[in-house]
Amino acid sequence: NARALASSSRQLKGPLSFVWLDLDMGVLMDPVLRSIWSKCGPDTIIGIDDVGRPETPTVAPWLDKLIASGAVELIFNSDEIAPNTFIRFVKKKGDLPPA
Image (cartoon, rainbow, N blue to C red):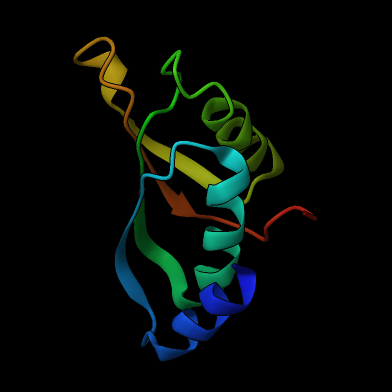
């Protein structure tokens, strides 16, 4: 529920140092990230699980869109060190693209 997410994000104090997104679907991650985006600064590390995992096919395209738009910068890809671990870490770089 987007209203519940927005309400809970108002209770968070910014800037956040670390965020972990593990919701298995891009369509679920997007509203959560949008609700906390204003609390993220350029040093906030955003961890995203299940990127490229066959069982979660919508996560990678969602993250690819954020990277291509310049909203986030990829700082670590776990698959480069240990194949099939599916974890990415990014940092806020610009504005989110339109939903």
